[in-house]
Length: 270
Image (cartoon, rainbow, N blue to C red; front, side, top):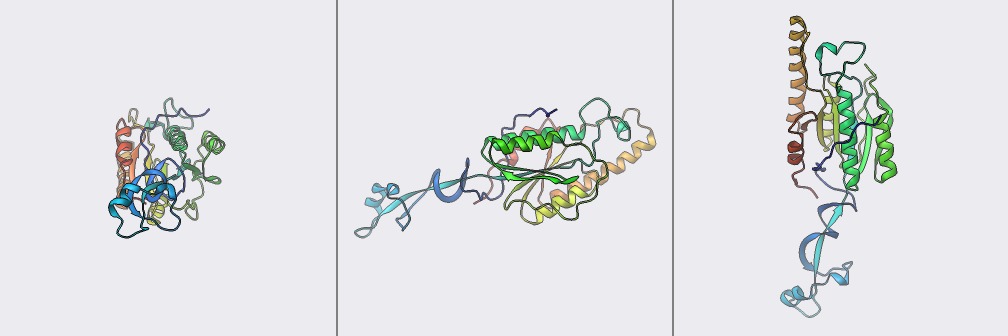
């Protein structure tokens, strides 16, 4: 069953847009975007771009022409990386239970985040890719179009928890300039290490914390103490990611939309 898609109104973009077409305005000169500047006519400029008023005002010698330049429009490359190595419920007492308890689990939230982001970026004509940290064979490179979106949504729908999977020998390769969303509980180091690798390579990394709101009912005092240790270790991982320049989004937080708006605030990019 496909997870319900949440409406995403604000989309974080890569630090630099590299695509030649799309719905986002870049800072490169080109067609289709906003006004950029007035400049001298050069070989390759289109005649219809000649600004006669600017030419009359600025030309210093006969035959000198000025053109009105606009910015290019670009698309973004987006990689959704889902960590399906574990699936934990909100009730901490059920983390070790053989059968899940009622309520949304971490994998439910991760799948919901993935389909929501995939649909929103595809609607903006961006290229969307998918990767499952527990199964490298399921990777899909970023592409655009409704047919590819269907493949991504189907891959997310079929994602199941694999338990303790073999650690990836190397970080999956991403499209140049991609923004990568890493959806994980961050209960161990693997997702953190991969996110740090991508960040060091210059990618914009958004770590999506999919741990559901927790309850500690029925949890003995000894296990509550163990939970504090787990929380401290997880907090250190998230702090390390933030220190490296990764950005944090808690999917189950009531502040999710506000955080997305902040992350989508235009940054310097070309």
